[in-house]
Structures are given as C-alpha cells and as structure tokens.
Figure 1: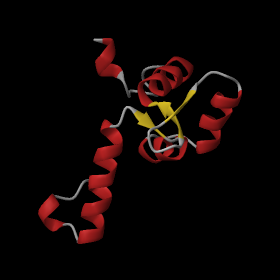
Figure 2 (figure 1 turned 45 degrees about the horizontal axis):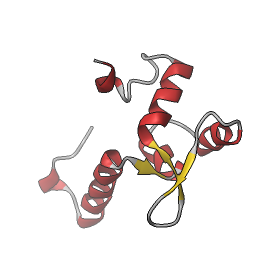
Figure 3 (figure 1 turned 30 degrees about the horizontal axis):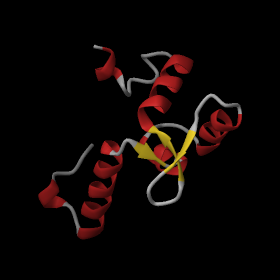
Length: 91
C-alpha cells in the first residue's frame, strides 16, 4: 500500500522520486530495471548474454537496455497476465 506523499519522510520521498524517474526513462541499466520490475537481475543479464536483449551505451557511458524492448521480451516470455508492463503500447 502506497503512502501519501505528505506522510513520507525525506528518504522515502527521495526513493519514490527516483523510482518515478526510472519508470519514465527509455534507457535503463539492468539493475535499475530489476528494481522497478518483479525480476532478478540475473534473468536480465541472461537475456543479454543469449542475445535476446541488446545493450546500448547511454550518454552517461553505462551499458543500458531499452526498457520497452525488455518489457516486450519478458511479456512474450511470461505472458501478458504475468507481465502487465508495456501493455498500454499494445492497445
């Protein structure tokens, strides 16, 4: 259950703001993707190693994945009920 913003302490508010930023970012690191989705980072790195997901170099210099491509891959793998992320693009 989400707390209302007025009832959060500073650390909780900053964490919530960071999560909101990650939700909107088109390029994201595998670790950050695992933080906002119910998946282990190892599963993401496995998809990268087996060439199911491609990496791109972000402007910050880190290797990132495209969040929408990752959502599509795991949705195809797990099914739309188990992976509801990215559903709004299908409609």
